Image 1 (cartoon, rainbow, N blue to C red):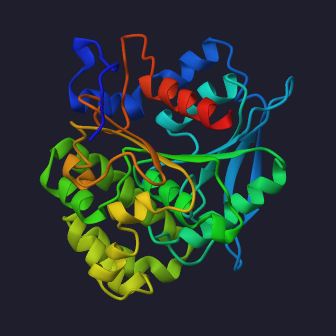
Image 2: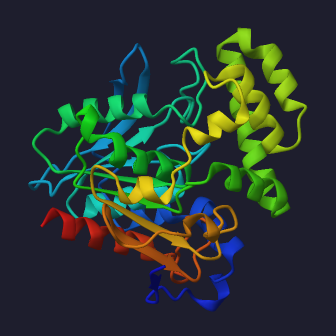
Length: 331
């Protein structure tokens, strides 16, 4: 593995749980606004035709006073959205550096439960590729980059793997703390910190209720899911009843990414993760190194889950590192 040594968070915020909380709950959005970030003021909402009648949404922030350096599509994690702190802050950093930025909402995320009858599941890569094709029409003739976080990092890596065959050719795709072994991620949530389990389950229950409110035919299934306590049991029931895979193992296999798949991708990839991530076990990356399509593989000692906060001013090492990778790829 490649160890990155230049990320040294302040001692007070070094703990993995603190880093992970700061990824989602810190006031970084307000700090960007106080700094005069124009990303929000130039954002426009878009309804995207993702193919087969599927509609996804997102927010495009263009450069209005200079030629853009490229288009970056950002993909949030499970139960996140275009407004998630980690993604919003990354978007501000990229826009401030001269990139057009599109913050994509996955199906049933960001208040879009009413748009598509069928429920979200993690193997729906075709509609993400379809949405990105539509985004490319909004910002043509620009080099494309894709950056995803956690489950969004898994989607992003699959965009890099399958995109060229579908008319999506990223110059570089970056997965930040990507969930490449979904069973391990689910088990880490079930068996790990009570705080993380409560956080993810609370957000998941809210989305189940929102889907049932938008589509009452899901009410009975929602009621049965909400009585369950373990995420692995919920996922098994869900895979049987709400996916085309019919069982847990083939469903998880559909979006598990093996090392040979990653290094054999059809376009360049990069991975950034933390050894102390409480949700994505470091062992998931065993067998990976910089070769083939994987142009950068960086593991920091600290950072938690999508944190990488350097200091008490809440500056992000991951934002600086992503910018460096994008700038090198753009050249």
